[in-house]
Length: 195
Image 1 (cartoon, rainbow, N blue to C red):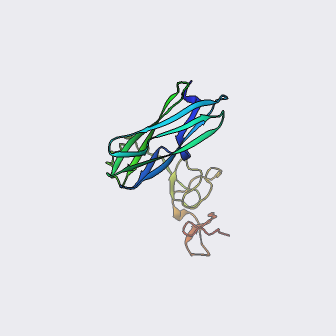
Image 2: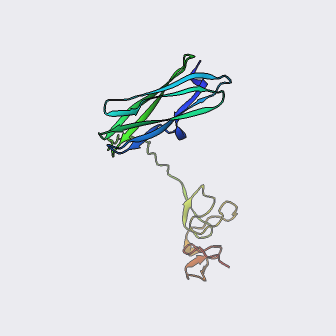
Image 3: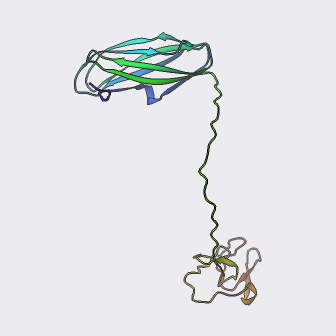
């Protein structure tokens, strides 16, 4: 006799219900016998605060055969808006006593937003050593594998980095006319492949 003998839930395994004030809310509660034995005299009783009127508060499921489930409808109504806790309690003649908490939201309820605190990160700036790209001459991080300006692979180059843009011979992009280094494979402005 344990809670693991049953799967006890609202239909679709939700844990909350929503309705409007002064409107009946009908919902199903499922009791599934997970054992290999017949479970006699299964009963579910619904309880809640006085603001919620329980139109159907007790359902007798009768016996539930092994590995099968039964569902029963319950109905509630509330005249006030708010969030109300309901408790469905499953009992059996074999001594089971299982509770299912249900949240009933009636109407539009404004919740108070809790302030969110994010962990504070130590802002340590790591200064990267800058070098010149051997193809376009722009400043790049020393650990870069590709130049973010011209797209050239700077890891496989055997050339020494150039000191500036002026030291390189240039060519122009056929698409946008931007001045590019002689070794550039792609235009830094429009992304056109250079032939």
